[in-house]
Length: 282
Image (tube, rainbow, N blue to C red):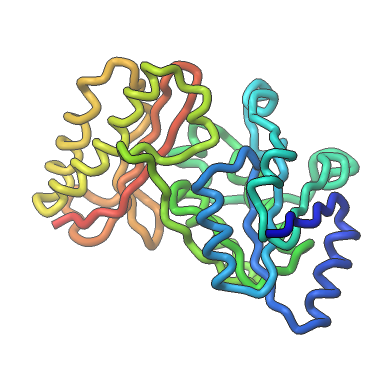
């Protein structure tokens, strides 16, 4: 397989897109921060079924990091990432100066109330940064379809809503979470876990599975089952465990019946992990 062409300027990316459009080809975009793993590659595989041309963006976006240390810590592995993307047509890998030549933009896309909850409560302004850079990427690449993972359910909800609210001409394609054999969701942050923390991290998906199994007995039973799975692991510092509506992403009432998304976030040492699972509350 051929390696992708790496494009590092907005002008260059737009010229590439223009040429592909002139040839009658459709385009799929997979936005990433890099440090690619099998979860990202599942996006790339799906994109091949959705469009003629695949573009993967690799950009560590500073405006979505609320703690400077997290931004500095995030792995930057462009050369290795490009090697993993054999068969992809183009990689868009701009510098921070290319994307923000005058510093963070004064114009921003705001995530609204949902953006202040869950991950937004722990990382104020994070989702405004996400939506703003996604809007920029969609404008630059102009894809027919863009892939976003279900692993970050809140991000997926907010991006999908932004596209609908702003009438953007792109379809958002959700990609299922890819997991290790023991259930741990793949994440670029997993590399920071110690061996003990890695073993403890399995309890996040175990808690979600327990919630799903108990869901037919109602939200209280589902919550108790999930909490029971987490309580025995001292290395897991729980931030939140919530059940939200897929339609509004707001917490469901105690007497809610129907489809929901169970969200969990926890800190294991210095590493923060998130996960979720679709459940049915009966």
